[in-house]
Length: 213
Ligand code: E4P
Image (cartoon, rainbow, N blue to C red):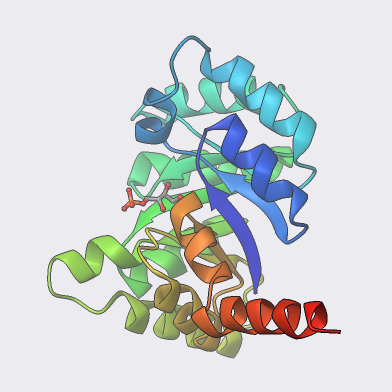
């Protein structure tokens, strides 16, 4: 499983990219809205200069024509921009056109295996099931990952599954076990994944022993 970071914050991206395990970025309108004094286009350009892998940029339009217009403009910013489109009828019409034009897409706000299958068949490069938001309403987000992964494997579908709306490290581990291709993690969860008390204790003890020489 690969790691993306789910943020539009440049400092966070710069820092985690240096660790070597991040291969892409996802943004959404709520994350972009937190970034002040910079346009969406400018921020995408800045991110794409750092990150060579997929950078998801979401359209705001809700109609197919609007999505196509916005998506083509965003895709022109850098070759690694992936157009994030909501899981709607208009969205899938746009995905089908983008696929013909060679523009990569990430279908977002996926909450059922049926939605994932439709998006994949429409030509989506990625689908993003939202684990945390399903858990929030008493459903099991991870079971959705298992279902989508099984369907895609049985039917040899190449669309990649991005486990999204990740809230804690166990979401990441379980998503990997269940066959997600990518986990897009908030900055905080990436840091939570790093740490283990036994690692810290181990380093302390090695240094203490070394200094006794
Ligand atoms: C994914 O691409 C979304 O940006 C994100 O994971 C949504 O997460 P949230 O439910 O924490 O807002």
